[in-house]
Image 1 (cartoon, rainbow, N blue to C red):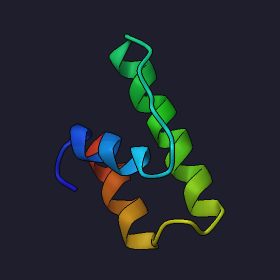
Image 2 (cartoon, rainbow, N blue to C red; image 1 turned 180 degrees about the vertical axis):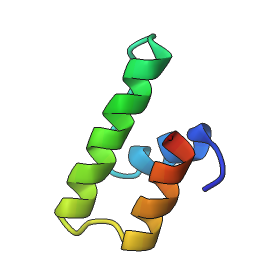
Image 3 (cartoon, rainbow, N blue to C red; image 1 turned 135 degrees about the vertical axis):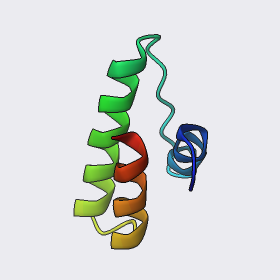
Length: 56
């Protein structure tokens, strides 16, 4: 993952499509969704860390 688009495609694999129209709100929702996936142990720690660094 290197871009926000890559994160969107990654989340799409889990059935999550995020688009509100407000860029900041979109990024916050993506971060929340990533945290839930990580806590549910559906994604690896490395994927989680990389995605958070890109979002921030």
